[in-house]
Length: 458
Ligand code: UD1
Ligand code: MG
Image 1 (cartoon, rainbow, N blue to C red):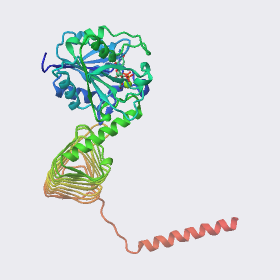
Image 2 (image 1 turned 45 degrees about the vertical axis):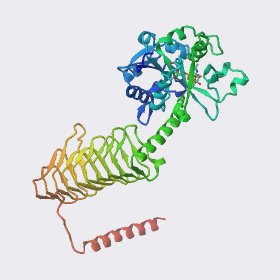
Image 3 (image 1 turned 180 degrees about the vertical axis):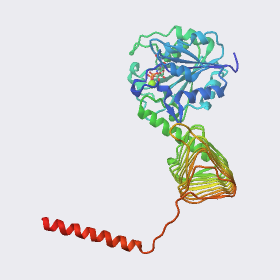
Image 4 (image 1 turned 90 degrees about the horizontal axis):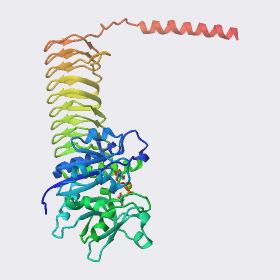
C-alpha cells in the first residue's frame, strides 16, 4: 500500500444559483476568507501533494484564487461522479489516497481530513472511506447503508431511496477518502440511471462492494463541520458556526471575552495571552495583538498591530497600517490609519491620525486632526517624542512637530515646529468690556420696533 501520500479533489463546479451572486459561491467569505480558502489551507497543512479544483467554465476567479492548485473544467456538470472524473488528467496516475471535498463546506476540519485518510490506510484496506453524520433532520441527504460486517455497503440518494432506507439516520456528508489506484476504475463504472439522471460519486461504494472491496464510514459528531452553503442564509449560518469556533479557540488560548457572542474575529486574528476584549468588537483581516492588551467595547480593528500593555477604545477605529506601540492609549472616537504610535503615546479623544508617526510619550489632544490629504496626494505628519498637541489642532501635512514641542489648542499648523518650541496659530484674543450689554440693547430695540410696525399693519 502506498503510505503517506495524499492528493485532493475539491468540487466547485456547481453554479450556486441560489446565492444570486456575480461571485462564484466558493469565493464568498467566511470569517474573512473565501470558503474554498479554508479548505485549501487545510489541504496545504495536511501535505496534499496535488490538489485539483473542479470548476465550471466561466469561473476564472476561482482558478486565480486557488493557484498554484490545478483546475479541471467540468462542462457541463453532470453530477459529482462526473466531476471527480474531470480530475483524471492530473490524478490518473496517482497511487496514494485521494480526498474528495466539496468546495462549499468551509467548516470541515483538518482533524477530520486526517481521520479519513488514516481510516483509508487501515489494515482492512478499504477502497472508499465516507464521512457520515447524523443530522437532526436527515432531509434529502444520501443515506449510508451499513453492511453485515459493520462496513458500508452502499450510499442511496434520497430520491432513489425506499421508505426503509429513508429511515436511516446516518447520512453522507459528501466527503470521501478513496484509494487512488482504484478511484478511476470505480468511476468508469458509474452510470446515470437514477432519479436525477446524474453520475453520482456515491455509486462507487456499491461498485466497490460488488468487486469484493471493503468500504468504511468515519462519523463526525459535529454536524456544523459538514454544513454546506447553498444560499445567503446558509452563508450566515456558516459564519456563525465559524465565529463560535474562533471565539472558543481564543478563549482556550488565554483571551478573556466579556461577551463572546458579540465579538467577530477574522480567520487570521492573532491574539496573545491575557488580552481582554469587551463587548461588540469587530476584527477585520490581518490584526495581531500582543499579550496584556485591553480592547474596550465597540472597537473596529482592521490591519492593525497592537503591542503589549496598550489600551484601545471604547469606540476606537484602527485601520490598516495602524501600529500601536507598547502602553499606548487610544481612546473613544479616535481613528488611526497607516500610522505608528510609539511607546506610551496617548490619543484619548476624538481624533484622526493618518500617515503619521507619533513619538514616544507624545500626547494628542482631543479633536486633533492630521490633514493628510489635499484632494490629490497623501502627505505625512511626524510628531516627535514627548510633544503635546493641544485640543482641536489641525496638522496640515506634510508637517513635522519636533520632540517636546507644545502646540496651543485650536491651532492650524502648516509649518514645521522646532523641538521644544511652543507654537500657537489662533487669532489674538480681543475683549471689549461691557460691549455685550450695548449689543443686546441695540438688537432688542430693533426687534421691538419691527413688532410695532407689523401690529399696525394687521
Ligand atoms: C451530495 C451527495 C449526497 C450528500 C450531500 C451532502 C452525491 C450524488 N450526493 O448531494 O449523498 O448527502 O452531497 O451535502 O454526491 N458538483 C460539481 N459538479 C457536478 C455536481 C456537483 O462540481 O456536476 C459539486 C457542487 O458544486 C458541490 C458538490 O459537488 O460542491 C455537491 O453537489 P450537490 O449538488 O450539492 O450534491 P447534493 O445533491 O447535495
Ligand atoms: Mg448539496
